[in-house]
Image 1 (cartoon, rainbow, N blue to C red):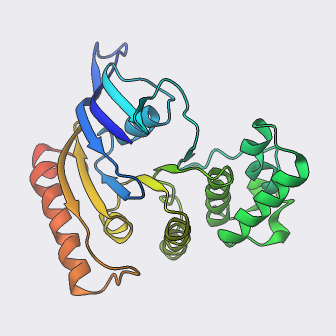
Image 2: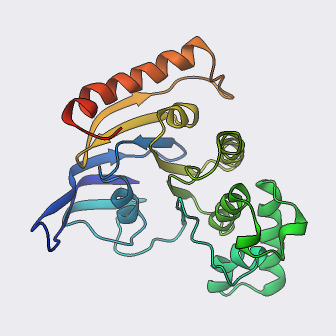
Length: 253
């Protein structure tokens, strides 16, 4: 997955031009987990929408497996902060949605969905629950399961754990890392949390005003100890990048 000089301009009644991305370039090697951190309004969500084929760059290109993205590409899963679960479908039916659209038979898709639910630690007794009957953490596990069920090679994640409490967030991060370690997807994960980025990522990209301003590798072995000096040192390194490139320009870190 690669962004090659991608820019995106929106026109609004209040302002003639709003540039969400400006000449943005980033390569995400196969199997790498890249976290993008930045303040609100810096273009993180626009970045994922372009990668998912839900919007298109004003200039530049977005490439998926070497081909320009001209619509939702095959083999790509998207998880948002809200989860976007369908409230009228039960949990299992939400997870099977992608396979249903592809025409897979009922028994086969239900078996695939149950296998994925087990991987994200959702018990069989939630299958017939509606999303509103589940906790926030369970809904996010369900959204992750739905994205994983078609076996995507690329996962796009837009602050998926921001709405849950810290202990639940840590459990969800562990679930994600477990799936990624087993399957080796390419993951592009955007977050406001520097700590989350350093815990998850192979590489942290700091973004502001629609541009990349720093790329910091995270060479720590997994599982990572959030209290280790090495972890804290990297946390401070990313924080300094924020201070230099974001806070100093009036960004909302």
